Image (cartoon, one colour):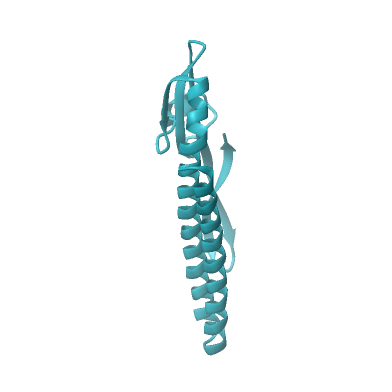
Length: 152
């Protein structure tokens, strides 16, 4: 894939996001004008979730093609024995051993890259550590959410 094809992919992803977002707003307004507030809130919620899924899928496809076309070939000029595994990451146990995670933290990692630079082994991956926070609201009760504590 060349730069023109990647630019087409980027534009297609942006257009998909815009069209999906506008459709969600229009559909919500139509349902709101016909029904009460509850169906509109449900429609908006479903629509926003759909937008999020479409955005994520478009972004992942663009990222994968961009890395395959530009990043990996350039890394091969710097690192020998290059290994790139986009779905793999640094093992959680390695990060836990550093002591930077609480016992109840959630961990995810991807974009694993390893190789040698001047005969020194190099390992890199993206990772995210999140902690669960509970909040109380007198109207709705307890709720939980995961908040990022470290992204690297």
